[in-house]
Structure formats: C-alpha cells, structure tokens
Image (cartoon, rainbow, N blue to C red; front, side):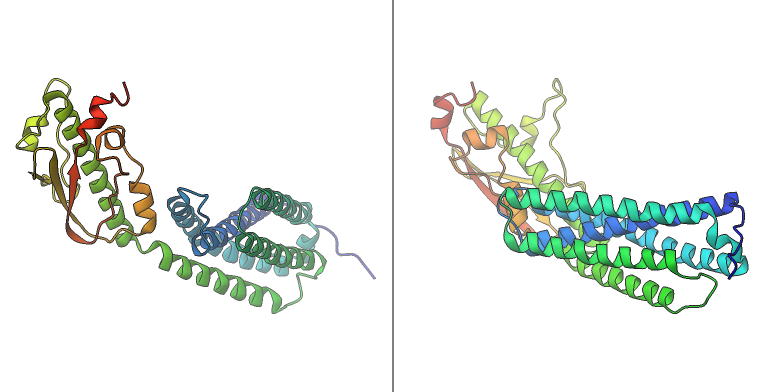
Length: 318
C-alpha cells in the first residue's frame, strides 16, 4: 500500500480554504443567531424590556449574512472538490489538514462559549422553554458540523460521493426554511421601511408634545398653533412627516388639553406600545400622571393629552 505524495500548497489553495472556512463560520454563527432570535420572539421573556427590537435587528443581520455567506460555502466546496479530484496529491496538503482541524477547533470553541452563555442565562432566570430550545439548536448544529468535518478528514476526496451533495442540499434547504420563517416575523423591506417611518412619526410627536408642555410651563397657556413654539434663537423647528413633509395636526381642546394627529402606515404591536411607553422628560413629569402610550392603528390617529398643573407646582425635576 502506497501513500499518495503530498502536493505543494499554492496561493490559490490557501485563499480558497481560508474563504471556505471563514464563510462557513459566518454561516454557522448567523444560522444559530437566526434560530436564537426566532425562539426569543416565539417565547418572549418579560424581563427583556427591549427584546423585540433587538431580536428583529439580529434577525435582519443574520439573514443578510446567510444570503451572502452560504452560497459562497457551496461554491467553494464544489470548486475545491473538483480541484482535489484533478490533483490527488492535494488531499494531503498542509493547508487542507490544518484548516479542517482548525474548523473543528473553532466550532468547538464557539459551541462551548454558546453553551456557557446559555447556562449562565438560564441560571439568571430565563424561562425553561427558551433555554431548552436553544440548547437543542446548538447541539443539532454541533453534531452536524462535527460529523461532516470528521468525515471530510477521513474520506478519500478523489472518490465520488453523494454525501457532499446531500449535505449541501439539506443544509441549504434548512437555511432557506429558517430565512422564510424569519421573514414572516420581521416582514419584507417595504414593511420595515413603513415601520421605521411610523417610529419616526411617533418620535416627532413626542418632540412636539414636549415642546408644548415646555411652552405651557413658561406661559401657563397652550399656543393656538404649532408655529408659536418655533424659536429662531435656539434653532427649534417643528418636525414634519418624514414621508410627505407635511406638518402634524395640532388642536387645542381645552385650557389644559390638546390633540396631536398623524397619518400612520402600519399598526403598532405590543412591543411598540412598550417602547413608546418610555416617557420623555416632560412627558412623565407633566402629562396627567400616566405613562405616555403611543400605540396606533394605520391611517389617521389622534392622541389626546392633558397637562397636570399640580405636577408643575410640585416642582418635578427641579
């Protein structure tokens, strides 16, 4: 029995394997991130105050990384496989052995760190369902990665096999299903744009409201129009709708009450209500004693506000 002589590693070999391993790591990390955040959304924890927005941002980042990295992994695997069959000596080149072992090492480290993080989160009081599902996701990915690369190290790359084809098809199918499922959660690009525009509208209304309360504090009267609270010296201008550029509706409804209206494109969900419930400085101190909620439907929505003068007399914040 003779041993196939080892060929020399070329620059193309080095960068081909580096690209394959780097994109594989990005793909695995992004896939786990996608699963983790999907689990977070399906099984929310009330202790995570800003959980939804953070999860949606992480899902968008993971989808972007997977869409780019995984096709590169498939392409480079095919490219390297053809190269190995064309030159049998390349199955023993040092870069292949070292980087495949490095892949196992990095995967093991990443999995260990993930497990440590998950256990720490569990001990910190995370709900059991989330913990169990995340551990299961890590273990399934770990078994798949270790099995494949251990098999890759032991096999004869010159011989044709269907394992690599089935591995590529199965992994791609799982990733596509995960991406599609996540898109149902985060929505498409057009929906995300509409959500962000509505968030800007709420932020604008909060700014106007704070300015109105500040004006009442100084004048002890509400302005008849929003133009009155604009100030050239401090450079304040009332914000306008980010899409249409039109000003927001304002009406005085009483001596201490007013109404602000805007046109919204989307319907706010529970997480939006939690986010909008965080008050600005003036809102909590002077607005009626309750948290300032900005939940809204689509279309024209008006928010009625009443100033509580007793809070001003008590000197809140001074």
